[in-house]
Length: 93
Length: 478
Image 1: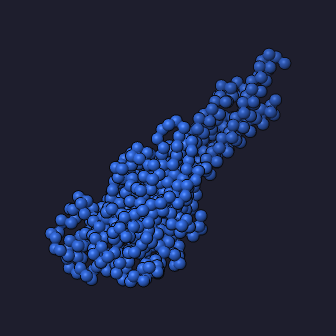
Image 2: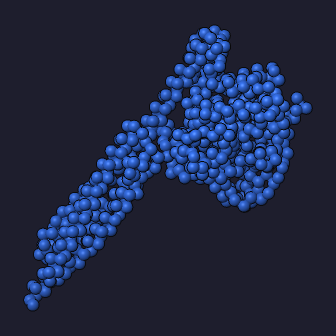
């Protein structure tokens, strides 16, 4: 094995380790974001507000909930892509 | 806590014109927490984004999926940042909504008072005797003083008369009408005597505040005195018990629990807790005052009666006030002793009168279901008032004059059946105890600060003692 091959193997290993660390951190962030959504964003049906105030509050909560969902989906996709990259690196190794 | 009552409270005052339900406060705090959490997650994601760099991916000949992951992390950062920005904006909007609601309530109240005054004036001008019975507060007074004969009064006729009308008197609309019409009785009387239109409004609560609910009550007390009712007497106070305390008050519900129950303790209406300190500072005191024990307008032995109720609202010397003054003197309270007053019903009114006098170094005032007093609470006093919006007693006396008191409101029987086997159920001390428990759970910052300020005095006391007092009227002295 040449020095260049060894350097490449070392770079691959470092990248794989970084991707594994990223995958774990993404999972932790996803759990934290879902917990924030559950704790701080009430279901619109639980409010006692009536009329315009209730509609405005419900719409605002729904809007925030949709954005949190989009963020979670992006993190899920990031985890999937990361796992795929790790698998590819493992196959090459 | 009883299952059949509403558990939503509304908080206003405390130097702010904002009005907020507990739910609104909770939602605002939740959004602010979401904002903070979103900001923290953005920082976390930014850190994750830096774990794997484009340069390292290139050097490792990493697959394209790794770059896709980087792009998705960037997207997630954008979304979470947006959550933080929008939740922050929504929290601000909710705080503004609370402020706007307070402004609208304030304006509505002033307009309604003026309208009620003008209607009362017109009523007095045109048909005084017919309209007399339509002013809500008067039937209660008239029933107590005139309709019920002496035997009925002595046998609890007033209580029965009120209990039979629970559906009517436990109604927030009626309570609001009473609150608005109490100051308007002056306008009604002005109409009867053909006073020029506008004068009573200019002089009353809606204007200069020279005449209003207090003068109304004073007139009622004076007129009743002519026929031998509501007559004030001297009072005597005696100590009924003293013991060492093991616990200082912890929160509003604990304070309500410490108010004497005259129906259980042999009639002691006043409790004074004394705190002494090892560092030599002046002793401080908690004074707890019971409510009305006898609704008869005459021949009572207790100063905690209808006479003190009416005279108290009228800002006239009242037996209940004199009784507490004597008990405080007996307990060693002087002009420099820090004092916190807590009272229910007439006890709340009595506490208000004492706290706003110049006689004491008042540090705290906790009113529970008391009639409104026009006396302004000094700005350096921590003041909290609980009023059920369906409690007819809290409507007596008109609107509050001070902005510094934290007002806590709750409709106890919203959407619920009003009991028919108790007198004025929304005025019940037990239900106020429930409301105080809800208040203890409040996340409102001003409520938390007020609770802390009231409880702080006793916390580092070296010794704590409690003494109860019973006051009686000196009938023979008048």
